[in-house]
Image (cartoon, rainbow, N blue to C red):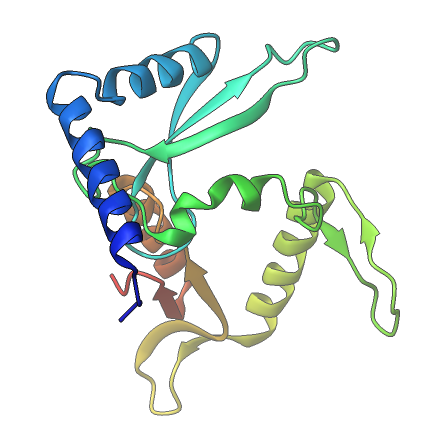
Length: 196
């Protein structure tokens, strides 16, 4: 326990009494804090999104300034929980509350990169090149390893050498479509962060 002198105890007590009396008389800072928040976000654009961290899928509200033009590049300035979202009802965990740092991190990758076999350098490629490369490699692997029938003649139509890891922050509809596409290719190794 902290050792207080009688004089220090009386000062703390008097200060606490004065502060609580002012709050009871209506000098509470709630309204002022709400007005500052309203002013801070008055000119921003609100965008609803889903937190990317875990499989819970909490809703977030992102506020950005700027219209995307050359003279006013859009930038996210504030992130908070979405009070209308049925999962989190406006609350965020510590990782979700720090999303603004994730977005503005200088080490965050924003473009696809490719490292050639045997190289120690990553090179930036376009999204079209990345998708075309993925599609080409998947087709080559499926053509080489697709198994239509087992040794005893049973029809199986499966592809065992490639798997799919899906995102948990997707909607039910996109999860359903992802599952249908993966299964139609014959992949058996399919997992989801949400364990759906």
